[in-house]
Length: 221
Image 1 (spheres, one colour):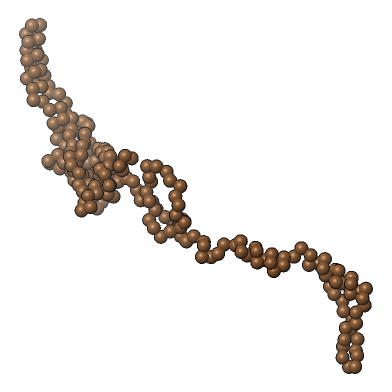
Image 2 (image 1 turned 90 degrees about the horizontal axis):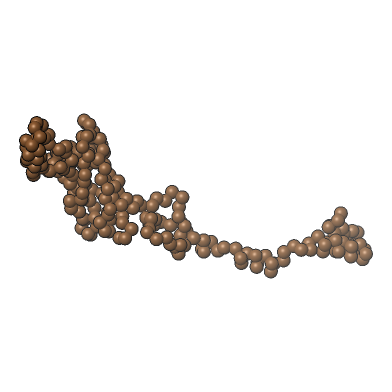
């Protein structure tokens, strides 16, 4: 058959010895050479294997917590690769009333509330407060406004919370109705001045006001 070397044998002195026909052998050797032509030799195989990655040089999966979003992008230079289920820490803290802390974000009788962020910040964060419906009752028709009264820091100096103060707007006092042109003008002006003297447009009570707090790490800090 093509590609196979046929060898004839005969018995000589009780032993089987090969008998070669020179022309036959030449043809068979040529066929065998053609069959193996182009196959890789030992040097070629060695060169190919040398190009393969060494197991010790294959990067390992990272065991570090991935960094949060940065204010500027970076290509990175670390070799370990990220695992598919990795989680980046938040840059924000979003808090409100929960089952575990049902009154943590409710203004007290002194007009303030003390809240704790879900993460710490190296510099004071940008804080946004939003009034939400209370767990019982209804929201006031007059809007509330908030501000950070003071920051809370931990033992390392990181910002871990704040004390928030709230005010609520109130409607203007009712003015007296007067008659007569001159009398009305004089009496009306006096009534307005008297009614508005010392009037605080943000003096409505805020006790029980529920709110949420969104604290975001500043881009400049």
